[in-house]
Length: 125
Image (cartoon, rainbow, N blue to C red):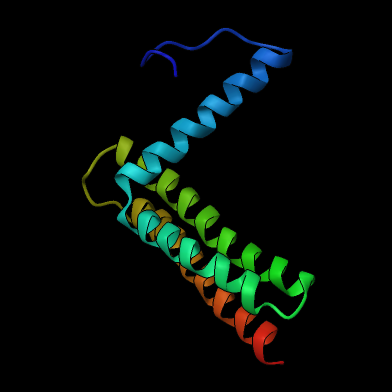
């Protein structure tokens, strides 16, 4: 969206909103290109969202089932951002860097567990 190293001017109104969409697109594109896990989770969503719409017993269950899938993607995007920032400061081993990366990975794992719990509860209870 902007040149590397150049801070864009402050924008307001519609310009700010359009730039925000551009930054969002850039973030999604970068995560898709650099993270195999994100691509796999996105593929799972492409398969499971129609399944939720078909098998979900009611509108609320369908919304919660789809929302749980979106939460995995959100967690993966945050995990990717954490990894990018940590890698920005070096590749040598560091306990704080390990903790940050492990915590991001744990967040994705918990979000995936949430999908399982939500889907089991919505479909069978």
